[in-house]
Image 1 (tube, rainbow, N blue to C red):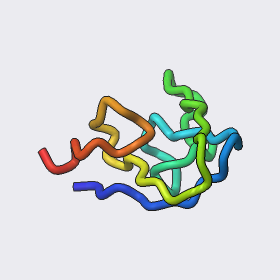
Image 2: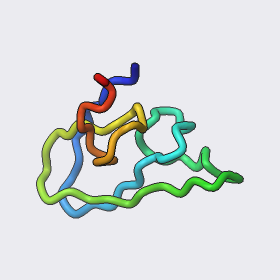
Image 3: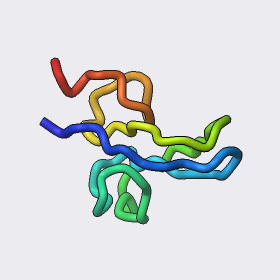
Image 4: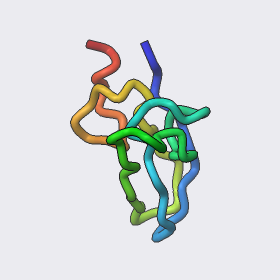
Length: 71
């Protein structure tokens, strides 16, 4: 089971969520998808605060955890 990762995100900043699962932290793209069919998911937030991002890659609400890792 991969638990969500708590991260502090800044309002209106661009982030890139790892969709391949091969990045070192399992959450943010670090280019590990190169040579595959995966592409990172660009996202931003509307508020400076802590968020829980999915690291299990099973949820429908990526990049945000929806509890799919518990199923």
